[in-house]
Image 1 (cartoon, rainbow, N blue to C red):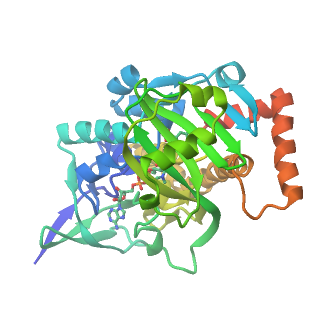
Image 2 (tube, protein in one colour):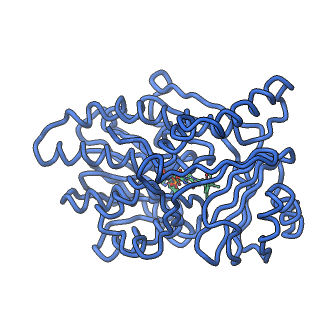
Length: 394
Ligand code: RFL
Ligand code: PHB
């Protein structure tokens, strides 16, 4: 027997994109159900992003989940880019009048889960065999296995917020879906440690031994990354090896301040740029990592997912409140125009800040010339600052 459920919007994936969408829709009185192939504890513990644009902070406020973020989030007024001994400060407030806020994705997810569950949000966790059907019909459906039973949710719209490895994107026929991909020849090895950060703002370094990033989660918790081989295994990286390598890739000033300690999270993330077009097929909408991936240089992934959701929810609210489908009809086109600009920024900053094993001597010189130009040109710094704080939605 198949258990039948019905709703207005079925959201696949309860990462930040799916959860935020669920909350914003609920605030507008639009019924929704969220399903995820993992459980809440697993999702809350997934350590990823750390830097929120103002637009993301505004979306959290609009959703009514920013009380803790407003107290615990740490505003960053600038960032540093360093290149083989030279260092350049980008004053993002001075150049744009805006800040970004350090607040972990784990905390964003927790805050959203708390609010959704307090309000009786409908969730199915640990689902299996998710299948989407009837995407071109008025009443598409999502079928899956949950707690030993078959479940079918029929709905008006499906939101594919199931990340890069989800099933939604592949529900779009292959002759319609076009994908664009670039895989970088390295990954990031990241750790979290309960030690004060060497800098209260992000420091991105292109060192001859490879990229490093100093970031943080609080005044007592640091998040550090180093470029590593994409096929490397965390098991090869003891804490001691990590600290030796990290200290070698930051400036002597920062290395003198470095407080090392045991790591309580350590993982390797591959670097990839990826875009799928279109982001709508029939009554399926893709949002967040399900449709696009950026390399983490520049901290755009979560922010891009949130921007998609803001645009999609506005469109759905228009549709439900006034019967106007213009905004959902133009969703894919509008969002993709923004996505490509953010892809460009993340790609450019990744190209500038990493050691590429296949670079020719000419390409190495070009990279250095780009950094030297940046140090001398306020216009170039402003370009980075304007992208770092987030491009406008419209
Ligand atoms: P998520 O977070 O991957 O969530 C997708 C959810 O869908 C579920 N799922 C399914 N559910 C049902 N059925 C299926 N078949 C399913 N398949 C998957 C998954 O279990 C999951 O719960 O996607 P979403 O919501 O689009 O959010 C995207 C962000 O998580 C991602 O872009 C960022 O983490 C990227 N990112 C950063 N973004 C920033 O804005 N600022 C940063 O500072 C930043 N740093 C980072 C990052 C990503 C990193 N890694 C690990 C890739 C640093 C790192 C190291
Ligand atoms: C992080 O704190 O995890 C972080 C910060 C900046 C980035 C990427 C990740 O560009």
